Image (tube, rainbow, N blue to C red; front, side, top):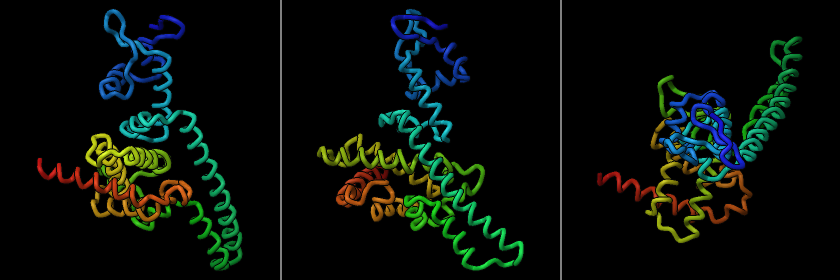
Length: 269
């Protein structure tokens, strides 16, 4: 049922489910976990969604199309990342991918042409192709590869590995949007004088550790290497100008202090 309760349209849960292609059960679940809560309730206590709720639903579905999981989507929306930024970031990624693939295509066509007359093409041609492959990797990916190795980007070790490394648009989005946002939030807390034990700081650090686990197959030592990449190569990892990360060591120390507090709390449980 759609109702005109004021200047904007209201959607009952069944109508919104039908419109979006979701199930009522899914919308109920998203309400329960706080991902998409209806702004209103009818006199009979039925869920009623406003136009603002529909706009949030659109962002959720768009982020899910990028391959993000529900916790990541929730974290991104809670950070106030608008749909325009999601679209712009994804579009920029696609453009970069197309440009780099066109360069690689040109080099591979040269190799193929050489192979038509010689089973082993000129070494210089192969070097150019290798260079084109390397140029496709953003600075952030290159920094992670230096610390984790190429295998971290090769996909899951097995089909049932819940902590397998991620790749594709989801990987790019986590690296380019959520992770820098988490560090920015931590820095705001630090500058505001928050203690590393503050619950908000602890939530931020816990999420950072969840993301590092995605790129390390849950291996604690490899997770340390992810954190080391952020400490030693902050400009590459955050995408910020080097000058903007000049005081990064203080933030890294703050985050590590919060992590140690969380670890100590776990040991006492």
